[in-house]
Image 1: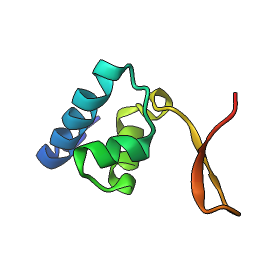
Image 2: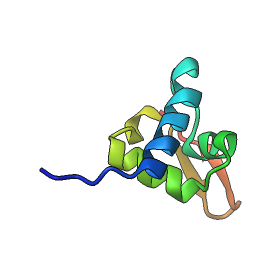
Image 3: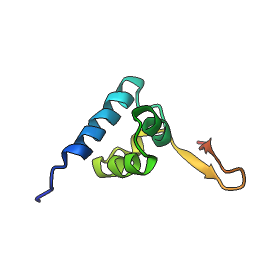
Length: 73
């Protein structure tokens, strides 16, 4: 399998890991994006590409309220 290496994407992935690993991935994708000053969509795409999507704390968008709420177990 030939996958292209994108230095910019790998840099952001490292910054995501660098922020999330010390706190045990106890943050949402939006919180991680805010912490490293990268768009939520880009962080979400990179997390999916790296297989890290399950590591983040889950949220759901409350459509009626228009804000994120913690998902209930």
